[in-house]
Amino acid sequence: MAPSAPTQPSGAQRYCIIAFLAKIPSITLDEFRDYYENKHIPLIKRHLSAAVVPLPLVYTRRFIDSKTPIVSASGVNVGFDCVTELQFSSKEDFEKFWVAPLMAGEGSKEVGEDEAKFIDREKTTAYQFEMHQTEE
Image 1 (cartoon, one colour):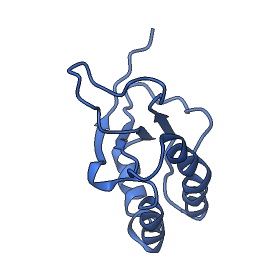
Image 2 (image 1 turned 120 degrees about the vertical axis):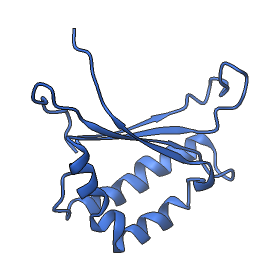
Image 3 (image 1 turned 90 degrees about the vertical axis):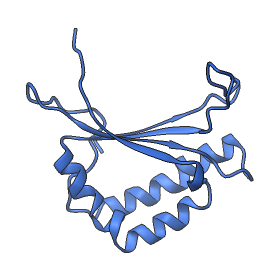
């Protein structure tokens, strides 16, 4: 995972996965963020360090501001606590990453067990996007 994103060739489109994650009810938002950043991310990095597949160019987590009411414009609870984004150079790079040992092999079991400690999977959704960006 690069600290800054490399320049894409003209006309190239990145591929992006965005997941809306909900914490398990038994932990606070601060505990969720702490676990994600200080336990789960190191686990992911450990598995990815041995990967021989394209890695995400960007791996961003955006946590809900716990001091702000968590409701949508319609007044309904938004239902998630964190938005996670992974960006890849292409859909092909994402597909190579997704079938890597971390996602489909032995590492998948360990990562899944770890996620169950802080993520409510029944409330989690993820979407795949083709990115288009306007430059000034």
